[in-house]
Length: 395
Image (cartoon, rainbow, N blue to C red):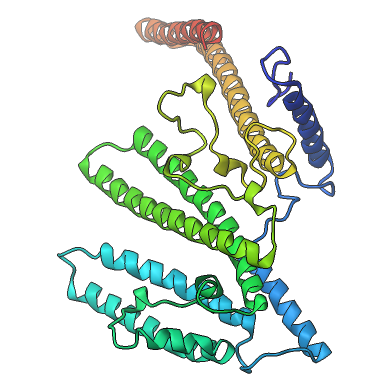
């Protein structure tokens, strides 16, 4: 049975074995002919913010070509306006996190950098608001009520279409654009959450296996603290994006997204190898975030979920093959060591037989030394053979 193969007598549903044999044939076909579909790459394209931006840009180009564009600003189309609003929202979130994490012992340089970031964001938002009120003049009246209050850049209400739906009318086009961007944002956020959780698991394993001492553990603790901060920010991003999708769904009449973007709770944020309280290795249930874009619990028929599982299986198979190759190389090296000891013992025996000297004492000394070296090599050979046999019996 080759590397990466599984025993057919192992427990598992028949559907899983069907996928296993199918994946095995795919990866072997690609290894024989790299022009075949690469099993290590996603064949199902995920929706990302970049792809949505491209789609909206193409729509804008088509409108300009057909003469149906209603852009009120030469440098800022409706899609650019909403997209910039989402970017400002992200900067507000990061600015808030930076202020919270500044601490009471911050240096003047750190405070100066934060104030500079805050001032820059405030100027950008002011310029953006002027363009926004060209497209949505009714927002000027809403902001006029709060004109006298002091508002920091990170707490400024951007009044995106999802935030004004209940207070004033908003063009369906703006709501549709925001819905598309929020949907892609939620999808991107889950990918970012995956990456951060995998990084966290890798750092923890490295810490447990390799690091000793206070200095090394302090550095790793700071690294983990930064990763945890990114996970918290990602968690907040996803919750905000999904909340907006819930608000906009009845307005834009979009359905079906709820099956892939579930509500995210704190207990859902776990790595693939993490166990929840009360779970055992044999009863471990994967969090839905690892079956994103079509999370259907334990169903095996979901194409996109199985696509992710196939890639992970292919990578695991490569690791198993690599380890098998290492074992084979080690066994070959052990055999060569055994042959080397035998060859060296024979060489010393030949030296003993060919030793010649006019002085009898010198000749006997050379023979004794050669025989002693030959005996040592034989002893090492026997010890090595016994150790190898023991390791083979009890790996």
